[in-house]
Structure formats: C-alpha cells, structure tokens
Length: 252
Image (cartoon, rainbow, N blue to C red):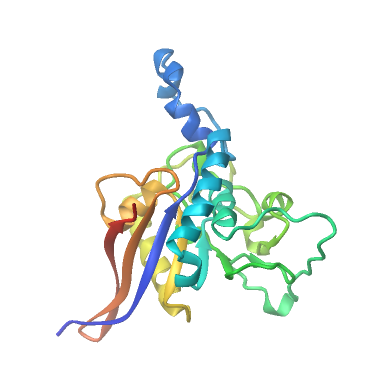
C-alpha cells in the first residue's frame, strides 16, 4: 500500500540572464552561425539585462510575499544562481565596514555553503551542487570555493568545493562531459532527500532551466527569473521511502 508523508512546498526560481544566455539570444550570433558553437564562457556572470532582471525579481518576491512563506533558500553554486539568490533575499555585497566572522571549523558542513556569522539575511542560505545545471556546455562548469568566496564574501563555501564539484570524470577543470540522464535523476533524488531532511517545510530553490525541467518532467523551460511551485514528499512503497516531485503552477 502506498502512503505519502512529509510533504513540503518548493518554489523553484530560475537564475537571471547570464552572459551565456545573452550570447545565445543575440540574433547576430545566429546570422554569423557563432551561436551554433559553444562560446566557452565558463561559469558566466549575469549580463546587463540579467542584473536589471534582479531588480524586478526582488520586487516580485516581495509582492508575492515569498520571504514570509518560505523558511530557507537553497541555491546552486554557479555564479548566476548565487547572484540571483542574493537578489531574492534582498542582499548585496557588503561594504568593508561590515564585520563578518568565519563559522567555527567544528560546525562547518563539509558539503554545503552557508552565510558567515554577522550576515543580516531574512532567511538562511544553503549552497549545494545538487541543484546545479545539467552539464552540457561551458556555462555549466563551476568555480572553486576560493573563486566564489572572492565574488561572494558573505558566504562561506566548504573546503570540499575547492575541488571539482561539477559533473565530470576528467581531472581537467574545464572538461565538458555531458551528464547522463541517470546521473541527473540520482541528483534529483539526493536533492529531494536533503530538502525533506531539513526542518523547514517551505523552501526556495534557485536553480537552472534544464535541471528544473528534468526534475519536474516539464516540456518548457522556465524563463530567466521564472518561478514555479512544486510539491515534494516521500512515498512509502513496500516499507521503502521514495522521493517524489510533483510539478505545480508557474507563478505569473
């Protein structure tokens, strides 16, 4: 007999437009056939349009009252996603006057990034590779913890992320190895277990179009800064807990 337990609400947010998205959308790059090839933009930052989108996203999050509804923000370590998560939380890179404290080594999670002590955020943050983009292009190759820490000084990234945390068997950091469907499915199950084990019952996940589409079995990609609601729960089958995702509406 099947039984559903531990249901949670997850709000997936796709990152704002990146330099890679901008390259692919540029009509001239299609006229010249440049868009048919990979521009080799590794872990690209947001485009000018993407940065403008963040302003609108921040206002939209407030209008939807998501920061009162949700209790934690989970985010992919790719720079475009982290920048978007900061906007969701209404945060900017701090000035030098703000004193931040490294988390004590004995409480650092070996797998996840978190805010440093002293960050005034409306919600806690958890950074995990489990919701990163499906590896397919240069844009899906990540940055190490040291590089990310220089760009996002309010976040303490774990030492394990100073090694290759994105998909690929090659020791070369910039090696592009397409991620198999089976591996993406496993990641989705692991992300589900992580979220279900958290004490929070309403969660914002800032992620990527292909990963969200695969996870929720959708046909269309979310637009940049798009928001889609989903339900997450365990289904008990023959005494075994199976992670289940159920796609909800795209929030207009």
